[in-house]
Length: 229
Image (cartoon, rainbow, N blue to C red; front, top):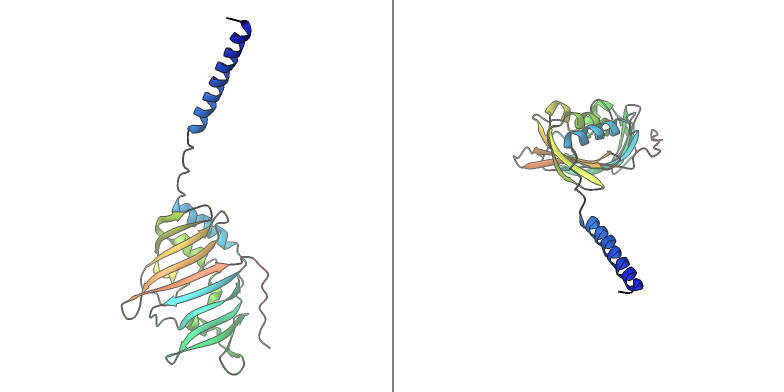
């Protein structure tokens, strides 16, 4: 056999061996990453939320909860406890939209008519006290640390959803009037570990399902709350 042909056959065989090796190596699929541990997710989120200084929030109440006159609210708040925004509250059986400002422990409300009226801050809880949300001792950070029987509901590259039970004494820091432990679901952003939603499943005064949902966003952006003029 001519030497030139032997060399060509040898190169062809070598090429097939190399290509075969590459093909074999690339066909193997990587092991899927294990799902995140739900308890670790909650712990990391509690740590992240303890360092949040400001946030935008929305609150939505469904069902009949006489301990809360607020049906919905939206605004901004600070870790210091200042907040401002709008809310829809039940007043004498009617749904009324109000503006609120909570600053230096003073609460101001403005109804559909007239200007702001200053009321005792102790009455804020009868509407809803958003200043508790970022309070590390009784807000979302405390709630996240208290969750029992944590279960991973779902997880992807952008968020994880964890469910569990919150003891009534801790849940009452965010949802006044709670008389028993509460089932809750938490949506945690990844990789920041910041809490973007907490939903508390309750039973209304009529015996039907009720819920309180708190959504958070725009973390650590500049927020200034001033008393109304």
